[in-house]
Image 1 (cartoon, helix red, strand yellow):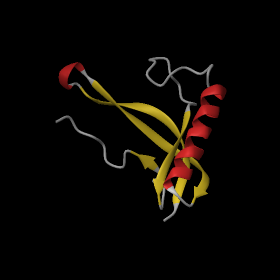
Image 2 (cartoon, helix red, strand yellow):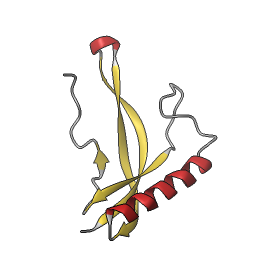
Image 3 (spheres, helix red, strand yellow):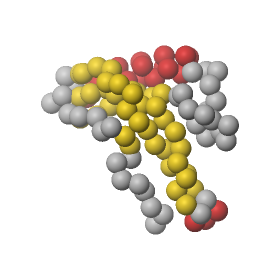
Image 4 (cartoon, one colour):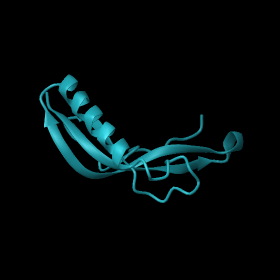
Length: 94
């Protein structure tokens, strides 16, 4: 099996007005970082990348801030292929 570590620019999107309004996390593929032969190795590499990203982005606003204007990234592990964006299907209020 092959695991991919992908870098996504993250954001929040408005889900709807139900229960006072709700938001959900989104992401757009920025680049593929690495391939890993095992899931454990992929998770290890993604954790390392995310620790570095946290240090590099410490002066950027958090995604949940109303003043957030983009520019925060996160590394995510996928099996076989990384989607161009997440979530692939817009969530709905249940």
